[in-house]
Image 1 (cartoon, rainbow, N blue to C red):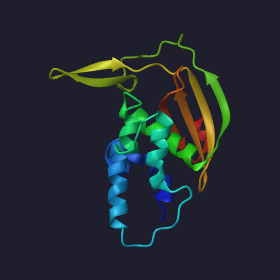
Image 2: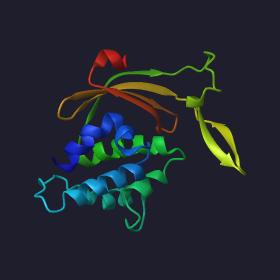
Image 3: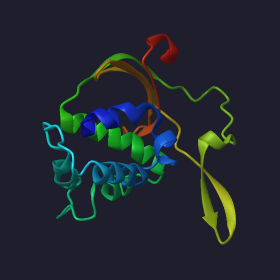
Length: 177
């Protein structure tokens, strides 16, 4: 199995494989996989996954890539789960995978969304206590199609800075709608 085939396989349920939704946990999982496969012949990738470090460094203006792609991507978002969504978007861009937009709506906040729900807040430890910090609300909801080994559909919630706040994937378009 190639690196990209593995990433595509765990993409929909990353947390099930890594234990946490973050690029650094995914990086640790992939490092263990690569170590286990070190003595086996690995399929040639185009572009080579190890070039992703330098590509991310150049994309975000880092002078070097020694910290690795996971930490550079986590540095771009306050929330590690949002950073994981950014990783998948960057990896698709690096691989040249185009997302075809199926639908987009502007999210109106006049509806009375319950912002106290844990899904709408980040939890931050402050001097021994846990404090909820509201996440930014989405401005757009987009449904897009990805062409991987099989067709995938995603519902993406983005804020006004075009940052991904939430991502939900399925192989069935009806479930995403």
